[in-house]
Image 1 (cartoon, rainbow, N blue to C red):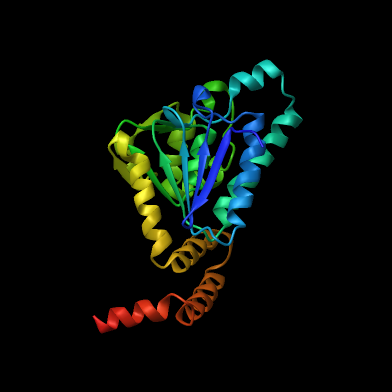
Image 2: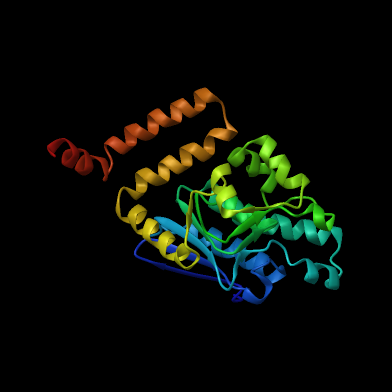
Length: 252
């Protein structure tokens, strides 16, 4: 395994770290393979209750390594293959019942925006910038950007981002609903870790199932979602978490 993606698991928290700081953590060929492998392995583990995504250096993720693609002369088929490979990792995060927190400091652009959209709770720094910028290079969005962006911020705002080269400020991203919190730049990862500890130690199964219910709703009918909600709360009531927490609640 190459070291373009780092990972570790402790106390129920999995940390997946983009590790190409000299390339602003842009995805290269090796990163695509590592991303698919690490994410699928992490979500399959029984001891993982929450995932924290972060990046080394001064950016979260600047998308794809366009310079490498151009100089290596990648064919159309090869680009498609790499996109499918990265999307395997994207789907692993999105479709799992494990809450995913993004500690997205610095720049998040292009495919990096897709990575952020596959998190369930995004935290950025006060000077962070976020955008699409595919059109600036004559490219079209990939890595789940068009599949998820309108869900997050609405169709009209999604179109504003993909039709312009605009980079949102942290304050704008918060106002648009693209991120959940804005904190001082040097506290992004610390805040993500703080939230991860809460999720990992307080009803992690219920929180994970809530994430799954919300994410799954877009791919099925309203009635199917209602049936799933009913079954899930029924299982939760007789599960390991709810009886103790309910007893403490009504006893207090």
